[in-house]
Length: 239
Picture (cartoon, rainbow, N blue to C red):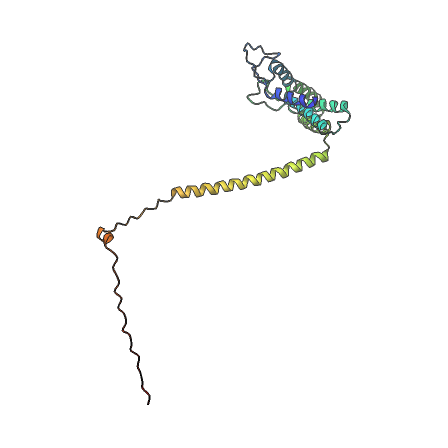
C-alpha cells in the first residue's frame, strides 16, 4: 500500500544519508550522490534529520506498520487521531534525544534530537527552572520519554497488552536462540579441543620387520608324527 511504500522509502532515505551529499545548507560540487534516492532523497533526509534528528525514523516506522496493518486487513480506525499522535510521538522523541551526544559519523550536530528537539527542550526547561531548579531539564527528559512511549503505541495501534505479549514472545525466541547458540558453541569447542589433541599427539612409528632371505625361502618344516603302536586283540578260547 501507499503507507508501506512511503515508510520503506523514507527509511532507506534516512539510512543512506551522507553529510557530504548536497542539501539546503551544504553545497556539493561532486557529481556522486550517496543517497539511494539521489538528490531528492539527500535533501529530504537532511531536512528531517536536521530538524527532528533520529526521531525522523519514527515516521518511517509508523508508515510501515500502518501499511502492514492495511495489508493484514486490520482497520486503522481514526486516521486523523493517529496522525496527531504520530506528530506528538515524533516531537517528544526529538525532545527526549535533545541532550544525547551524537556519534562521529552523524555529521549534523552535537546532539541526536535535531534543532526542533533542542529548541523545545531548552524552552520548557528554562520555564520550569523557576520551580524545579537544576532538575528541570531531567524532568523534561523523563516526561518526554513517557509521552513518546505512550503516543507511539497509540499511534501504531498497539495496545499495552499486545505490546507485553509481543515482548514475551520476543523474549522466548531470544531464549531459544540463545540456547541453540550455546549448544552450537559447545559442540564447536568440543570439536576444536579434539582436533587440537589429535594434532598434539606424537605420530605412531611403523614397525618394519625384516626376515632373513633364507628364512623366507626355506620351506616350512614338516612335523614328524610318530604313530602309536597298535594293540593286538587278546583272544581267549573257552572249552
